[in-house]
Length: 323
Image (cartoon, rainbow, N blue to C red; front, top):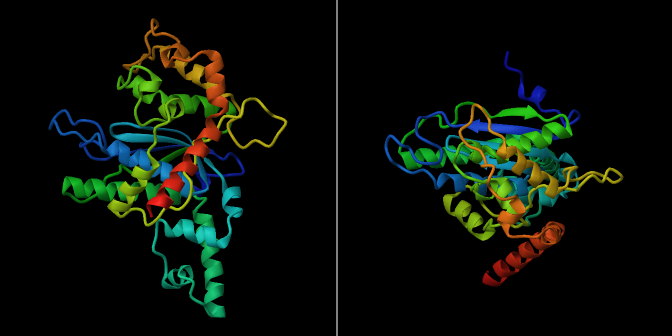
């Protein structure tokens, strides 16, 4: 029997969840329809851009993702503690990036003076928005609805695009989290869509190994499509790996990035009886494929977050100068 969504998602049990959404029609979400010969490959970028921007707006961290031909996978960490630390104005600014909001909210954001009753209404509204910005169901609603509308517009049809509401699976242990992330990152390899993880387009493993997300273009694409009203915050990086440091407050994944990369590379070489693809045994080790020594990789991994932040600040400066 189907259980209510609120019974499937419980922060007190675990903040980590595996999410899957699948397309209902024969026509592909992405990839090439071999019957008609039409390519939908560009739609993979729709998903990737939307996921990364929404993760930055919501109090939800992105651990792993993979966009396939007729479905996509996400591994997320719910972070209500993040939204609790936001001011009321920041909550409204984030929500206003996605929705116009009631007239009172619009007036407040324009700096107009509100009456006492209106201010009390604003306080209740901020509390509602704060809760929604930490809610997985609202995150998925903001992800799937625009994709469905855009695909229906492109296909010149109406009706359901997604098979059903998204499916979620709680990841209760570190082992479950790591195995699920590896499973998600290896989806293109298992489907014989890519030979190695670093060649798997529109996946988190490729983003971690070869960062190439174009924030400015992603924002412009969403603004042009009308599915984003503004975006005045920094892009949130993928949830970082902290190594086995159990003597501090855990904010990232309790595993080292290099150990995880090796785990994915090793798992991808195991031939799965029900899957077509795998990494051949004669494929060089992943460091060799990346053209890095172990020292270079350690330096790259240790400086990743700092360089990521620096690049985001440079991009923000460029946008301010352009404005």
